[in-house]
Length: 77
Image 1 (cartoon, rainbow, N blue to C red):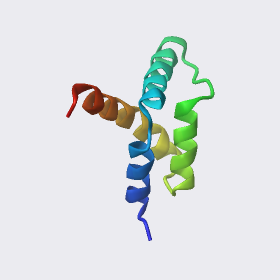
Image 2: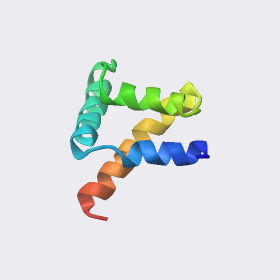
Image 3: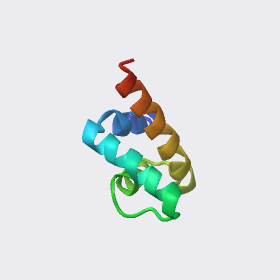
């Protein structure tokens, strides 16, 4: 049986480069407009909640995780 942490890791590990790029654009748009449209980030949040992460925590986890994963992938580490 997978733990919640394992499920979260699997969700973020499964993101394609295109999804990751789109998520970064959605975060930028959110900062500029103050509104998060439907898209990759909302989908990730929904998957996290379905995996057992409380919704408030899912909101906090997504942005930081997207930045971290993007930085690691695009830096080649």
